[in-house]
Image (cartoon, rainbow, N blue to C red; front, top):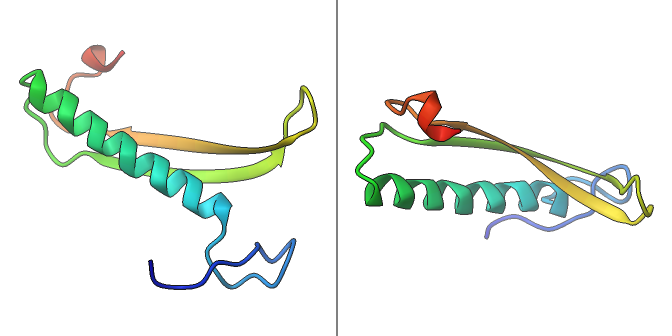
Amino acid sequence: MPGSMRLPAARGPGGGTNPVQLFPASYAACFKGALKLIAINNGFAHGEITVDSAGTAGRDPVDGVHMLTADIRVQLPGVERAITA
């Protein structure tokens, strides 16, 4: 992977890729692959699947431990919304 790993500017030097960016990117890539496989195996016609992600770091409100979250947004052209529920 090109580039360098660094803590975010709020906690370090910044200017590089950090875990808050890597986690949702890798999660989205895996999620997209799984969706494609499910669509193909179930005969769903679909256009290009788009998966966007964003991450945040913070504290777990229950126990105060560090927490990473990923917000995943998926577009499935040609697939009815009712099928995805």
